[in-house]
Amino acid sequence: MSTETLEFQAEARQLLELMVHSIYSDKDIFLRELVSNASDALDKRRLAGLKDDALRADDLHIEIEADSEARTLTVRDNGIGMSRDEVVGLIGTIARSGTAETLRRLKESKESAELIGQFGVGFYSVFMVADKATLLTRKAGEETGVRWESTGDGTYTIEAAEEAPEGTSVCLHLRPADEKDALYDYTDEAKIRQIIKRYSDFISFPVRLGDDTLNSMKALWARPRAEVSDEEYQEFYRHISHDWTDPLDIIQMRAEGTFEYEALLFLPSRAPRDLYQREARHGLQLYVKRVFILDDSRELLPDHLRFVKGVVDAADLSLNISREILQQDRHIQLIRRRLAKKVLASVKELMSKDTDKYRSFWREFGPVVKEGLLDGTEDHKAILDIASFASTAGEEPTTLADYVARMPESQDKIYFMTGEGRAQAVNSPHMEAFRAKGYEVLLLTDQVDEIWAEAVGSYEGTAFQSIARGAVDLPSEDEPSAEQADAYAAVLTWLNDTLDDVKDVRLTTRLTSSPACLVSDTDGLTPALEKMYKAMGQELPPVKRILELNPQHPLVSGLRTAHDERPGDAGLAETAELLYGTALLAEGGDLADPARFASLLADRLSRTL
Ligand code: ADP
Image (cartoon, rainbow, N blue to C red):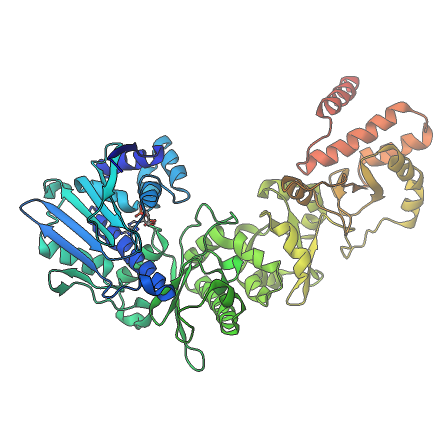
């Protein structure tokens, strides 16, 4: 293989450019990134050695070498190494999801300072401090190595390197120190020690400088909380999560007895962009007695807590455990249940301890946590306890417990309305009778809300009831009377025959000021659900709903009288159509034929002038 010059992928080029112009004020972090990568490579090597004797290596470690004359700094590991294709794929491209998107927004917006903090930059951060980087690597078990070199200007060269030892070394040619610009002399031993201590102390392999080991290698999750500083936890969180914002909360657990494990979990402050993608990574790593075993361990927490990051270290598992075995392991299932409970309990604690944090947690992750209400977990109660919802009672979200506490004596159900947004839900005609009665209604606007209330049924004995579904059985003095029912029978039958799009037409007491509204059958789909299924590509027969009429409204009583007097009048069918269209518009729905509606309405209006 001769030397080839290749171009960085477009996003990688943009990121490089940002790095060269140093977007971070703290340039020291390049060393943390290199050490973090080396540590991951050593984890992989150790694991490969467990599975294949030929790949077993002794004395896994990271070595730092500084040459102040030549102004170079080298970070070397004897980890897994990279093949040529891996170098091109991993170093020449940005594989991490969301980075390209973040870069695009960075370019477009001025909110950069905020955004930049959100994503890790990994290897490219070396170009903040170096004007040339040389990476020499050989994949464990392979014959030849690869030399990669770049000055950070859009291209890199790559060639075969016979003499490369197994593992990876990154040699940086440092830019001249410029302390005013926070660009320090990174060949200075004291500076190197300080950076490693600060950012990488917990790395579980020795980081050496000459004969000295710079880090304590103490597993953070095994240390008592009081001994570990917030900063150490934050650095560890960064190392495992690649998230540059600080975690919202830290959860530590230890179980003793027949099956021992320790866990250190983090609630992130922000939802990652890929939270709703199927293939998105889960956040937990599994260790066995301090040895890294698996990333992305879906087995350790249910899907609705997939955003939690952290480490679980189990004492009694085999180092050779595979994902398949893990899925069936009884102890793992037990850990999963305990971790889930603990996470939900910690959120509950946040609710009372730090309302702002809780609110921000629920805003970011509430919709995901609520997915847990759909499966058969035992956590329904715990999830409902930490849930909060928008409500007609005020601007702030409310918990179910508070809602129930506010219920007047005559109310026996938790009423809710689903919809796309607060305004739409609040102004919907369905709300009228509840407003008149002073009953609070929860406004559920997340997609998942369409489904769970049905699945869950009740909260501590109080049933959930959609106000846009089925008949309202509001305890009421003003039920439509028998006389009214008789008087309206003919016009209701006629309307039912005339309007193809509705399933039934009936009188209601749920309206006070609107003439009509549409409700779903008890077992029918709501419009939002219908939309959701369609978006998922499911074929559905058209869903018909029930048109409910307010007999107190002059339009409705007038239509009845007109129908009684002139049953053959063709104009009445148009009035019926307008009535139906108005009900649809009032709830924020879409008319099948808006042009026809507009022309019918214009026609009517002109006749009133
Ligand atoms: P990140 O570490 O956040 O994934 P980087 O840009 O730092 O992003 O690295 C990209 C990838 O390159 C890593 O995920 C890893 O697969 C590979 N890599 C980087 N450094 C090393 C190393 N020292 N040994 C082996 N692989 C490495």
